Structure formats: C-alpha cells, structure tokens
Image 1 (cartoon, rainbow, N blue to C red):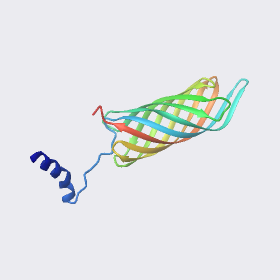
Image 2: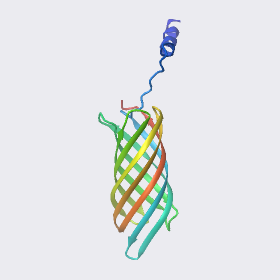
Image 3: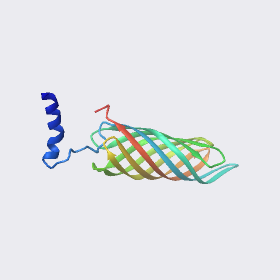
Length: 171
C-alpha cells in the first residue's frame, strides 16, 4: 500500500503544484536510428560517362552522441533511384546540434562515398533543423551538398526529411 501511495504521489505531485514533468530533449548519451527520404540533384561526369538529373532515395543509419556537447557521429547508407543505375552511397561524419529545447539546428560534416554506378569519395556539408517531439524521437530536415572524386567528378545537392529514434543505453 505504501509503495503504491509513494508512486502515485511522485506522479501527481508536479501536476498538483501546477508544474508539468520536464522531459529532457538533449541527446546526451543517446544511440540513434535514422530513416529518411531524400531528393537529390546529381551531376557526374567522367570520360565516356555522364549522369545528371534529379533522383529520389531512402537513407538509413545510426548515430552515437559523444562528449559533453550535443555532438553525434553518424554512419548512414543511402540508395538513390531514378538514374541509369541504382546509386549506393555511404556517409560517415559528425553532426553538431545547437539548442537543448525541442527545436534544434545543426550542421553536418561528412565523408561521402559512392559505390555505384561509379566509385567516388569526397567531402559533404549540410545544415538542418530538428524537432524532438519526445526524448526518444524527433523529425528533421537537412539541406546538404557533396563532391566526389575518383571515377570522374561528382557533385550532389540534396534535401532530406527524416525520423530519428533514440535510446539512452550509454548514459
């Protein structure tokens, strides 16, 4: 009986005092899963090869927060449809958040590698906004660009809209 009363009082006390329970919205200690839809403009030129136009695709991957600031490392893979061949891209990098409330802005710095239809590797940079509707989930939008060197020169610019799910196993 006393355990039930204690549990009830801990849940009701903040409401009785006119306060809502505060839910944290930072990502400290989190491990995340991201899933997104993307639209990309690609221009790729190599000797005897040309590929240009708008494409759409799906991106998925993981994030891991590190340090005392809101920094995350991310590893993501993307499959892009609508070109002469399916384009497979891998990207690894850092995401730096600004803001601890539900709305956040962020910048990304990545190493981007394309495996198909031609191999290329290069830098990527992006900026975005994220809305965390709970401590374990948020939606985000990113505008980014990247260059690829290798089998010709590749330029890509994309818009991405996605969902991030988080767990706090490492906290």
